[in-house]
Structures are given as structure tokens and as C-alpha cells.
Image (tube, rainbow, N blue to C red; front, side, top):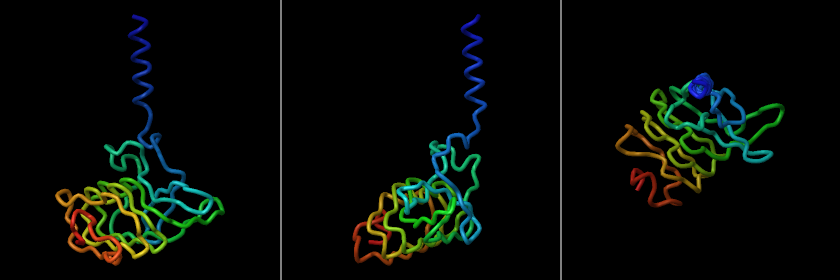
Length: 164
């Protein structure tokens, strides 16, 4: 009987942890276009836009999900420190179905795995500054109609052939 009580006490404790307790970001800030973005500090002057949770199966559960037209800023300030936004992390905008367009600043040099996986983007602007890109898109899981790949001359096979 005592073991069952301990088991249920532990189970209730785990279930009581809110989803945002699984946070995997250092700070958040509101973008100029009004959406809350989450950031991971890379070093003393650089950050990455990140997915807010360590649990990718719970898309933005308990967090503010970006929607509409998003313009990612080139810099962000937290605690008096201004950081350059140099990357978009794994699954940063995964399953953001209300997100319709994203404009990425020239400060970004890399976009990681699944950054725009499963969403309804109709426009994505990727600047020439991007020199590293992961498997960002999945052509059967979202409906991107327009993509502006100004770095096409640098990267020939990209985004499952969308820009090729």
C-alpha cells in the first residue's frame, strides 16, 4: 500500500508541472511585428531564435505562438545587453499554423533542422547572409506558395528542391 501511495504522489507531482516548465530558452522578447519570440544565448553577443520547449510534440503549448506576418529583428535586447540574432534553431517555428509569412534579417547566417516544419507559410524570405541551412521544410506537410531564396547562387540543392 505504501508503494502505491508513493507512486501516485510522484505521478501527481509530474502531472502538476506546467508545460512551460519544460522551457529551453534563455529569454523572450516581442518582435517589431508583435509576436513573442524565444531566444537561446549562443555567446556574449549572439542569440538564436529557438523553440520554447524541450518537447517538440507539444507545439507551443503554454507559450505564445507566432502568427501572421513575422519580421524577425536583426538584434534583440535583454537585461541591458543587445544581441545579434545569427541563427534560427531546430524547429523554432514548427507547427505554427497561424504564421503566414516570415522575413529573416541579414544578421542570420544559419537555419537549423525543421525550423519551418508543418505550418501554413505563404511567403518566406531567406537573405543572402544564410550560408548554412538544415532540412528546414517538408513539402508534403505545409503549403508554401512563395519563397524568396536570394542565396540560390551559394546553395544549389536546398529545401527539398523548392529552390532548385
